[in-house]
Image (cartoon, rainbow, N blue to C red; front, side, top):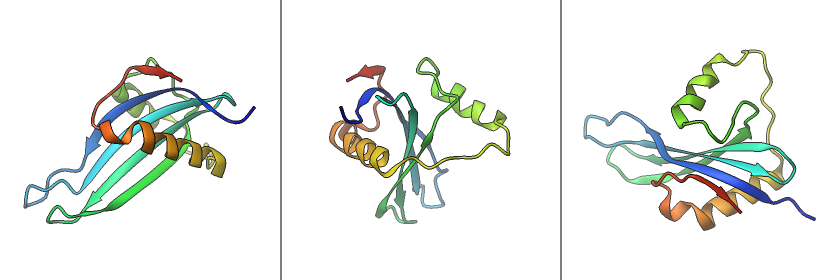
Length: 123
């Protein structure tokens, strides 16, 4: 049986950059956590980038293993906890297979309603 998503929790637009002098937000940050059939939990930080006038420049997908995450946490609880991690703890890159699975799922099932926070969703 192949790698699958078991559950996820999407926090919607969790943060954004301060508006610039033109009152334009140039970065919007979305967070989502996925538990895979392999037992790992991966966090996705999806970022939308805009120029100083508000023109869309593109997006970024940042993923990593979320060893300290539990699905009952609020976003602020998880985010504040990231500052308490040991500085020398290594960050491992997700595999290409994990990255592709999550990116495709996000784009197909979450992207359209990305501003909305969800509860824990089981697949």
